[in-house]
Image 1 (cartoon, each protein chain N blue to C red):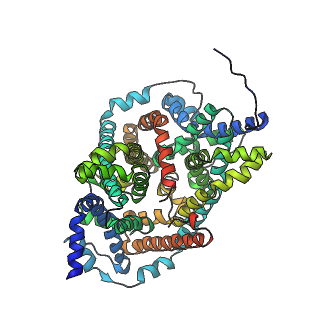
Image 2 (image 1 turned 30 degrees about the vertical axis):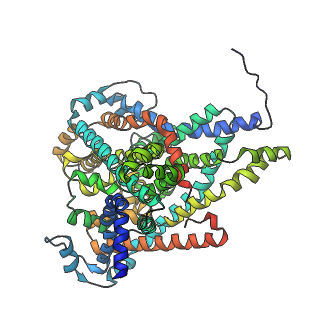
Image 3 (image 1 turned 90 degrees about the vertical axis):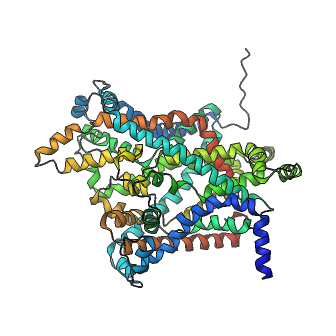
Length: 304
Length: 312
């Protein structure tokens, strides 16, 4: 092994500035990660220690009681996990199909109505009906109240992703390839699946990731449309625990009933354990897929 | 007849592509365009009818601009508009400066591995939901267990009831929002910096420009189009607040509404809590219309100065 000789050239910062830059970026990066570490520590803290000392970075006594509690009463958590995984998988698939087909059509110069449909999608980025009419249409016309589709359909299509995908097709898929497919007598669907899709995998990966993240982290649609406890996704479950805790706390002054209720509620450590279990998958996975995000962002910033 | 015939012929010729756009088109009709028509509820006294959606809308009585009059007669209208605008202005202006700053810092750090590590750390909050961020904030602000009160007590100061003291919340919300989005925005700008032609910097070095001059004369001007586009997009959405930030982080605490209520939370509460459908729809339409006008105008202005920087 040769040790490469480091020579500072004109390209580089002076050591002092390099240090300052490293510190600034390093400290901010640490602040960004810190709350997650903190919550993880709390989730492994002994409940009594917590009651005495509050949330502490270096707890006197550690414990895995929180996790034990979560896994013992795991039904709700498991079900919520199930709902989240289901809507994430199905939702992402639907999004990919709808978005990639639409974007492909409006990227084709031979498509006579491409301008109309481009505008049809683009206009929804400029103007929308707002929450109340959307809610009325979804509940009264589409009957989405307390339906699993209420967690999937409202987020299925997004004009912004369509624009990203269209730009991707028009820059990455040469017309010549489509023409050659036509020469060989392939139909449009065949051209799309056999020739275009393989070339646009990086674009699809980006959309899929955005979409997966959106579904995994969604709680808003559940807040609007879901009352049935069996259909509550992960994020929404965390939120509901919080709200019912607050409700009981606020009304606990003069009711003996509530103390009993409070005992059945997951304690602080258990709730923090749930936070860790809900965020864990994303935190572990995202360093590996972050470059696709960056890629998508750069494509999106280029306009046609 | 001829025109219709030609149109039908076009439809037939493009049938494959029309089938391709069909699913998303149906989606847009139901989830975007029908709600746009539904905004007529803003001009009605909405009555829920069991006979379904159309019956509800048709049977509701017209009240003209009454809903708007009621809305703007309340103090809420002023508060939510002010909050939404002020928060977003702070987010846009300082967000831009900090994000570009960090992007430049990351691009200059000599050890590329470390830079990558910092970037990964900064990017993390973007991947978390507001519910989780709400929990995170609570670990700092909790009255009896939170870290901030522990620190205050350590210095002999009284604990503060963070969730009922409105005066601290503008700062808290701004900090939490920056914590969550700065990394993401920096990465966007960093990607743009990486895309700048290296020969520009080489030419500048031959001319004897130092690092700072290079940043000022090359990096920032080259980032200008992206900065304009993203800022334009943000200005177009200045009337829209991030519902999660203003709902989850303050834990829907009533005593904080004067500084945490924004148009989006107001509309949500109108729909789900107080049930004033007409007035709430009016607030939503007010948001959409002003938002629409803002995008169009800001785009028009940018277009007059530099066509390339405009959105459309």
